[in-house]
Amino acid sequence: MSSRPRRRVRGVRLLGAALALWAGSGLAVFAGEPIPLEELPVAVVEAIEQRFPGAQLLAAEREHDDGRLLYEVKVKSEGALYEVEVTEDGVVVDVDRED
Image (cartoon, rainbow, N blue to C red; front, side, top):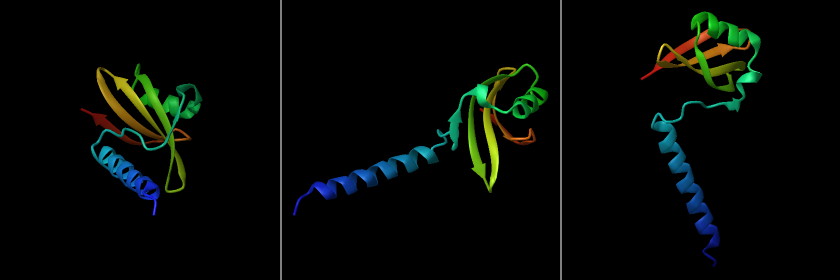
């Protein structure tokens, strides 16, 4: 019996364990699909600009949550970092300040 299949299974298990530890560590900022800021819907950008005037948009991801499309945008405003969750039609549903 060859040890090759066992190594592959062991490698998959190790990779799975490493990913679980990384995700549980709080280092995972987003869980969706990264998208360029230029691809954010206008309504999303306007909602963030209204909530955080003069803010700098740093990164964005698109994700599906309970069947609805959401955008998670990392924002820098007045020296603080925020993760803002916005629906595709511009409704801010969650704001988390990152310390």
